[in-house]
Image (cartoon, rainbow over all chains, first blue to last red; front, side):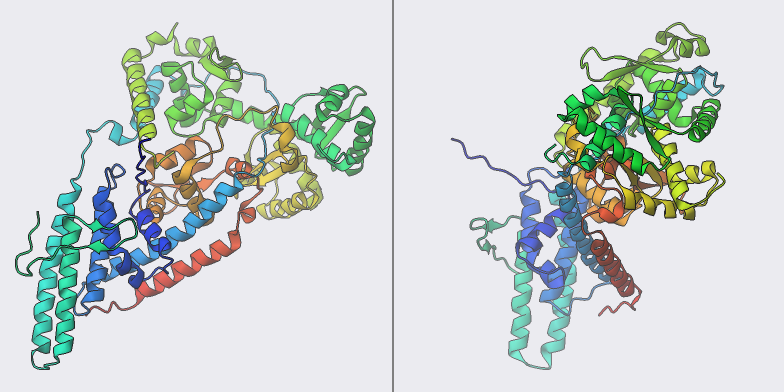
Length: 241
Length: 191
Length: 191
């Protein structure tokens, strides 16, 4: 018997992210978000096809997650006001979505309850009274309204965003910022001479770069809940295959 | 029904009459509820005791019927008159256009083409004598809506093929409907 | 109407809804019966108190409708054919939950909560008659979606307050939003 591989289908990026957090029984905060960043990116990269039109949203969320992860590893990484807002907004949306999702599960259960049926109202005798608004022209216009009322994507040609490229571009931008954050940290620690701390930062940075790289290329994971194996690379010449 | 308390029987009789919307013989009620006519009589006492003047149960001896008082009848007639006198509105024109260009259609098909529920709109169009219900050859439990001869007369045409851009509009609607249904089947994240 | 006792008003509302045989807005009822919306509210309490289980009243917030009671569903099911199946899918449930617990909402607000485009899902819910579009007082180019009596009827409940965990969920949603707004107003501390 062939093994059926079921790819879970997500409603969207929030749905996927919430599942990852709930699976680990975490509360929604930046620590939880940093913890699931790798897995989120791995899942997005592993998606055979994304729900139509949601590609950009999946990638945008990956960018925010990477930023949260980077900041958790490199506290010196500066983030803009806009980014700080994005992070807060993400936490809020996720908590909001969690509540609504819980409510939707309760609704699903509620739908098993007996429904309240319509009555058969009185039948009123049809009575034809001329209505000046009904003309050949107004009906033609109404038919055009019906045609225009169908969703636009049925009429327009499909435009598909290339996911991989978008994620690469996004990480590319982040890489520059991470590099400058590292320079900043070296400068700051140069005079202090606390080797352990400096070492920690470098180690963190390497870990981050590996994460970044893994995000672009591939994540090798041992089984569904196993460790994610990351490829190492030189700091100065990251290769994006 | 499991418990045959008079209260429960009264509720079931009320619901049955409301759902059917017409007088029903006691014999038929007894059969439908699997109760005796004696049990019906006991339940009728409950109706009498709690009559509030809104909906009243009329018992002519053999049949039962729900009705409202004369005061309400007047008010309802007045509301009906207003509705007859009013233009059918944007919703009415759209539903009528759907039935003219793409019909005959079931209610669900009109809903699908408009993207909104058309129950009330179709009720208005029917009352106004612009469309009528005919049996659905594909499903005897449902109906199809088609334009009336009065509707054609009002437009000064003899058949729907004389409607402006009839063939092209019908073809376009058919194509969009098919594309949308295909899209719905393809996307597992929507229903 | 001469006597405006809540009992009498309740009887009139009941009669009017029954005789018209469709959902009627509270606004229209107030106008036709020449009563205030406050008086309607008082009358609604009477309906709730004397529900007999046969015919019951649904209040979706703006519109009232008479339906058969839950305990008679098994019987009525045999005679009333439903146009649509009750299953509305995961996406539909989420959008409906957002509108029921947090509505009325614009499409953009539903998108924001779910993190995906909900155009198709909302179209399906609207088509099924579970939500309706109403004008958005804040922006005339957009619409708000609100639940209908049909949505409550399919859930087997009479009004919002009977939704599962309604009060608790509302409170959590408000708390969450308040906390977010407070954070937003905070001076942004970027390093």
